[in-house]
Length: 272
Length: 246
Image 1: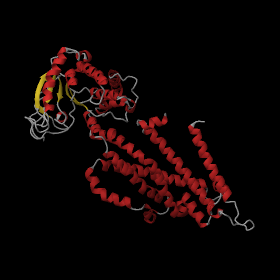
Image 2 (image 1 turned 45 degrees about the horizontal axis):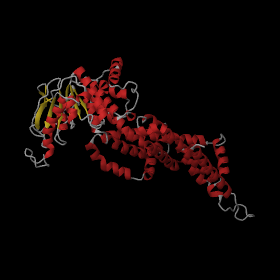
Image 3 (image 1 turned 90 degrees about the vertical axis):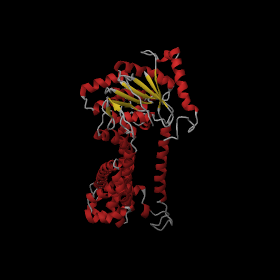
Image 4 (image 1 turned 180 degrees about the horizontal axis):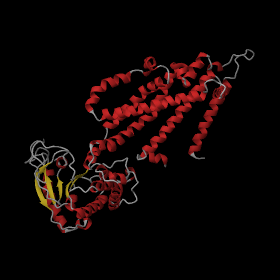
């Protein structure tokens, strides 16, 4: 058996053990004749079988707001927040990274804003932007922007001066230097921020959805709704879906990163 | 640096040797306009150098400055791209340069997959492809092993024989200077001055391997080694000509 197969086998084994243990433990009655009294109460953590049933039900057309619609709403907001956050953070990082005085002037403001716990902004964002898509995107943006900004900023500052000089000797103007030296150099740093960024975009969006109610939609709404009806199974459906969305998006980013950074030795050896 | 004055003729290959820290690289950077001198001037064709990176000057750095995110061909194409040479003309010149550097077949390779010698070849051809009149080289082969160095010496000489650019080559390797140059500028220790300008009386074209066994080479080496040796012999500050470092 190859090493890879062995690792995968263990992964599956752990999953089966976890799900099996969960299902089994939440099925044991504390006092056999009293109904509804369990060693570990599925009321709080539900059971895999119940979650699977709810999953099928919520994903079906029988509900007013299906799981798919909610997931789509979350994914859509996350991607928007990610795209807007990454692009603005990248541009800001480049500009400040190549403009020392401006960076020094703005430094205290940037640090102050970044030190703010983002969750504290939720009520304010809600006041300004309401409960819809826009509010969620803004929340995701407030986190993603800074992650990408700081990395790009570092990257733009760390550009090797000799690379700039050699470009200049080859006849490059300032804009050509920006395009062919500084941007590709800084991109390597920006990419390092992308995987955490997509996760943080998802956090921002779900936080917005927790407060946003039905008009905000999304899986965060399913969670608050389940809390209202004390439905642990539905809550688990939302959590599992969020986990799956998070993994798929992170893997997607990794693929893009690998393609664009294929000149780096560490990406080549990984593929080989 | 202090009273470091010397002339380079058109089409001439001049090497600058001297102990480290004497300002060899600074001279190159002054010619290239990367640093300005506090006193004195660098004149190219009678006009003082103003601004960084004049158009007719090519610079090969000591450090590996090949762009790691560009393939060999796209690295070589850089200068042409910057100067607006496009289409088939650019493709043709890149193809020729890559072939000339002995890198045919590696056009699409990224620098990380190449050896140090190959990367420095890319850097050299990238500079030569735009046909500079003046070529500044700052210990370009300093990080390479002896064998690779010799191979690149031969290649550089062949390329130079064909186009005869004016070359200023900084090195601390005396044998490298003798092998390549028409004249050698020997610098003193800090504060760097021109100690002497030595004319290398070796005929061209030179065979970089056979040259080293010849008596003429040994004589040149002996004479220069003696002069340069004086610069290493005295402890810092105790040099009869040198005051405290600047």
